[in-house]
Length: 94
Image (cartoon, rainbow, N blue to C red):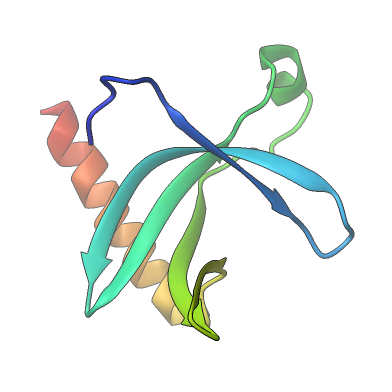
């Protein structure tokens, strides 16, 4: 992914109505589905206070002709996609 123009941010709303700003760090295509990895955009002092700021993985789905982001359907799907992202991150470090 190119960072020529800076990072990409989106805002999502959780089940409780709270807005969460996420920074896109990577995207991949797997079995015809696009998956995106995000990290919450938090201030450093907030990150030190909580361990709830890990990677967020969402997938792109189409609903009524509109592209939406959705959580993954199963723990197995999450584990598989998490593993793929971690492989990519590890490969980029080498």
